[in-house]
Length: 167
Image (cartoon, rainbow, N blue to C red; front, top):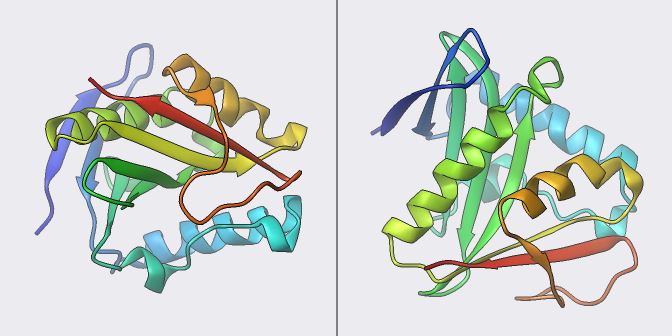
């Protein structure tokens, strides 16, 4: 069952639909394949923590797709670490939509979901190279601060860790 939320995007001539997704549509597989390929190109292989399609179907993962009409424009996922802590996984916006507010709308949606579900913390791992600066800037704008490794992560010069406490 898909749960949908349609939102207007300030300054953009489009509405976005964000929905919990079952990962069955070819467009999702293609976007995730592009995401994995790019992450492997810009990250040290030992430091690349992207989840493959089958791992995104795990019961502890919730995956959202973002659509403009019939076009997939982005996606994101969370992984439940425990009853109070989530990990943000697999945030991706198609290149032609980057910088237009798609990622911000999806992140806002995910944070609201986490708050509504009673989680008190959301954390993430991202790359430390300058390639990841735009993503880090987005997370900082949403109140994420840098932290020590969490969950099963360990210190890694190729990774940055961020967290946000939720009300």
